Length: 261
Image 1 (cartoon, rainbow, N blue to C red):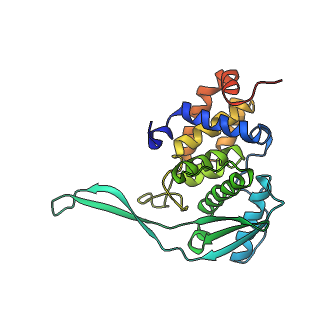
Image 2: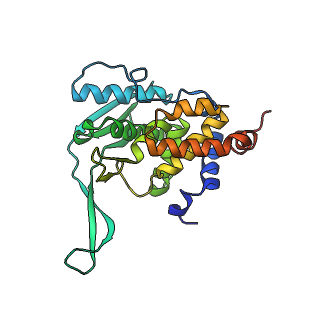
Image 3: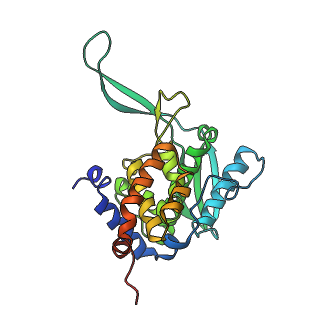
């Protein structure tokens, strides 16, 4: 099965999360706080742009359990990337094609000398939901690098980094940044994040978040409460998946978690 088909296959997603849990342990998947875009988790007051990004990266690294590593963040102007969005039918007749410009939000550059290095695009600072989701993804890259589980295939690594983000407790942030509309509802936007092919679609992220909630024993009422932190589309996906998985909690836990000794 091709990667673009796998990322929408629930059995494949469960298997990738199972492998992540087997490699790094179940504790963070089951017990880490589910990070919300609220003052409770991001209480920093008014800061300069550079201070703001450094504070966000440091907090997310702490939430990921790798807060003991020093970080260095460089603010840069990333050039937009033209991406084809498929064929169009111009009013004048004849086939055409449509493109949109995606802007890199952030990059994890790697680690060395005890320092994890990141770049963050200045244009991403205006959209907090996108920024938190983008940085969550890049911190998940750093976590995978530090824990030695990164894959050589770039497209696969991008997808598995999103799986890791949910594992770390960043599922709400990733879901909210994966799919949204502008205030006018006319222009669909994608997560402003460095792309090398891959990334889980919002439906897949919501499925993994629901599976995590079920493994934590989250009731239907508790799931509804969590859903209030999600965007309208994401909330619908998440609650539907949770409702479907909740009666099979034992089976979901068995599929994802190691057998007790």
